[in-house]
Length: 160
Image 1 (cartoon, rainbow, N blue to C red):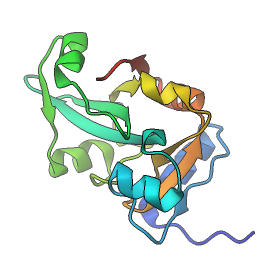
Image 2 (image 1 turned 30 degrees about the vertical axis):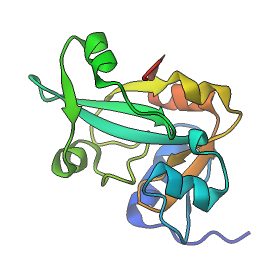
Image 3 (image 1 turned 60 degrees about the horizontal axis):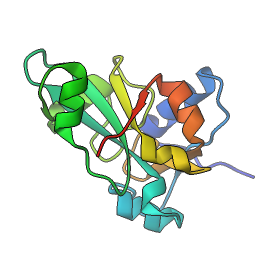
Image 4 (image 1 turned 60 degrees about the vertical axis):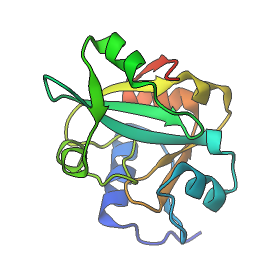
């Protein structure tokens, strides 16, 4: 089966996965996967199976926080703030690109420019397979929730 050439950012995610010892394949779809519902439509899965990577910024220390949420859930910022003892807010596009090397809408769970404090939505753990962004607004890869935890070193919590 021939693989299409991946965009540079998607290829970076593919290389990272390989270097971490995972054989998952990043694929780029014809349709956008920018939002969780777009991605679910394009893939043909439930919105809950989309692992969306959301970057937040701590208010005082300006640290990047990665929350990998189930596509159907909203992040309760207060919960995260309580866990790290600092308020957080949504990061803007420049901050996201600067810390992860990716654009909003394509941020993958791995391959970032710096190490991000990572939290994973416990609701993702109920699925056999989930889909995460692969570095661009139409790139995704399928994986298991357990491997998501392994590859990110993220802490599984209730994010709602």
